[in-house]
Length: 514
Image 1 (cartoon, rainbow, N blue to C red):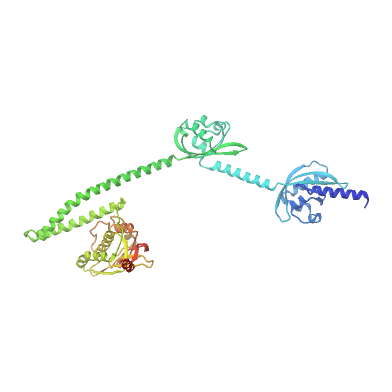
Image 2: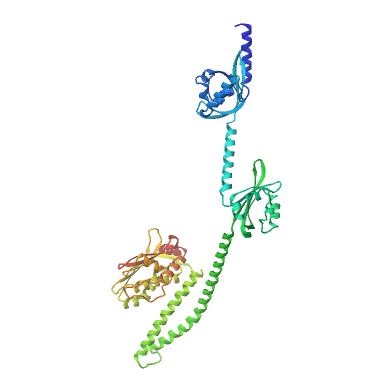
């Protein structure tokens, strides 16, 4: 090797070492062969090895298919001495198949005494991704701006003039786009309260956004509508602008006012009903008790014989009808307490067995008169946290219903049993007429009555089962009905486990405390 060749080799090595230190990729090409690449190109393309590895493929193989025609044309024109772009962008297919965007600055040079093309490549992949994301965001914003049913405006922060409005704005205010762009909202006269805009702008100076601001505007035909405004300072076309969104809430406010008015009227009517029932409680019960008392005296001839036996029978009818009327009044008053939320439950731990036995005693005569067998199966080893008065009332209602709707010769059974989940269930089962699912729905409604094959339309207020359900709910229990026509009905009141204790455990604890 001559001294001149050694000097050229040393110069090339020095230049290569220098080019390997820069972040831009440098690539030299002559025809279909790459003559030089620095480390930045090697990292950009993602290959290991030297030029031999790069030249295993033709130069176009490293270019994205959509860009190959442009790159080939630029290279050919440059080599032929024709005009060609000195800077352009294209995509490289990396060794692993991924895509890398590059900015290319190309020129023709002399390489070892012969013409070649040098390209300086800068990786702009992240820049392209950012531009793509920004473009997608702007397109999304544009679509939302155009399609949303809310009124939207873009206002220049410097002079408060309107830059853009959406179609919903034009539709609501009935204005032409050319009359709006470049004007201010004050000039358009859209604010019903002219002082609102000043207050709104002053408050906006102290914050970047405002939400749910109430105002009134003049819409198409000079109609006043209620709006809620949402404002946000944003950057649009490299300028600070205000995005103003208005939502028409006129119908919502009107609906809310109607609901409030209906609620107030309902509460007023409910209070009037409660006051009426409270007054009628005294006005009805006092004379009824007198009627029942005097009818009982006449029926039983307490003072002495009254002559004709028919008078005694009439007195008995008066007493029976008065008793029935008093029961209806009591049921209505109880229901009014439930509806008004005034039903009270005085909870304490009690033995339900003796209370249920009392209920059986009270309906025993009625069952005997109707030739109905009255049975029971009561667990006497439990304590229940409940109001004994409500327990007695709901069980009596269930027993009376069962006896009423059971044919002579049938059976009514009262049960008190523990459940599988350690709760407690009170059940009244009869062999009566039963009900269909639709009839059960009727029976659950206040004043709903089911026609009976036993006696047609039975006497009563139709409040028995609704009251039982209300009492059960007050005691944290649940009422269920299982019924089948001509087979019978079972109504159950189920209490949760935390309402139940074992009586023997309680007795043992009391002995230990003694």
